[in-house]
Length: 478
Image 1 (cartoon, helix red, strand yellow):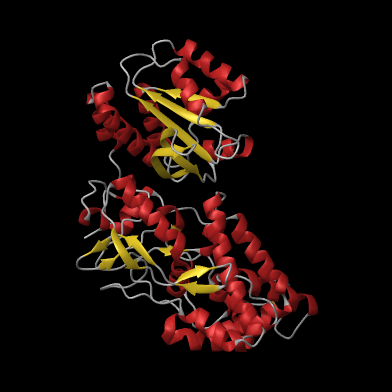
Image 2: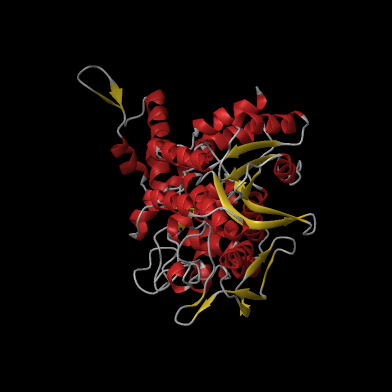
């Protein structure tokens, strides 16, 4: 049984911002540190900072000979069964560093030249350089280090979907970067009768594997450099082919130097620039979030049914009585077609101490397509959506209402959604006037426009280009 089924949300994975985990086992997806560090939002920066400060504290403790502190820090990376991410085939059994393996990992870190030489910088480096550390352990470690913000995220999701929270649930260890200690607290969390408490993870954070992989690093980065060096010095490993070409095979290098993590460390110490190149390549090309189709395959669920949502939209009567249902349908459609560019939707988001409310607010985490282009040229860390289930055309009051939500810190881009636009030229001119007055940028869409966006999404796959939105934007600034 999945989380959505247990709490009767009436939504499948494609319409949910979080990973819809099975409660009785684990889902084979993982939290990848390098993917988290690629996030551009304030929340993403907070997560990255927590990961960085924790591992820096562990390494500093080891270098300073504070063995007890280092072991205690690692021991608190306990098996994180409440996240339900990983390889467990039966009931969730995390593979965190934890109490049982803290001594082993601490010993490996203290004895490794990677730590003493300064090669180790980040948690993900341990996947390359420390024996016994693999995908599951790193993902579970990340879950624990990010437990604090993920608890807050879970609370937000529960409020969003009306899920009851159980009060005074033991949080588990929460990393405090200011005090550099683990803390415990009593928090509000969703609790299931059979499987206990649950902590949710945004689906934009998970990947099918950790991007740092020792075999990849060794085979495609270190060994080619070793081949080049041996050819340069004409070592005994160089062989001459019939055509006169010289070569050094990777097989001979592995036979001479080995292929375990000790061999990787020894070669990296001699060629630290190779590790820098690997890090740079990973930073410049982080793995993309899992697509709807990938989630459907991993979870054995269906793909989103956008045609059905469009039919619901057409059948819905206009008027204030159905405003909530209209907002729900628009949010479902946008959450599907704009994923993974836009994520973490918040409904009826309060600003100005609750004096103003925004129907739907998305965080802009785009790495390509229209919303990425938008983030590079305009202030758009968040995208604001205002939904008007009117039987009349929207005008200046609605435009002014949405532009009043903008700010330099929140962003100055919004989408005004209504049922129909009778005079598009007039409405566009009103939005142009708003932009020229430096009050922000508003794209107006109606039901037919949403149909066009859905069709464009279906035709283009998940490329997120949205040429229709680009044309609408150009009309604002030309």
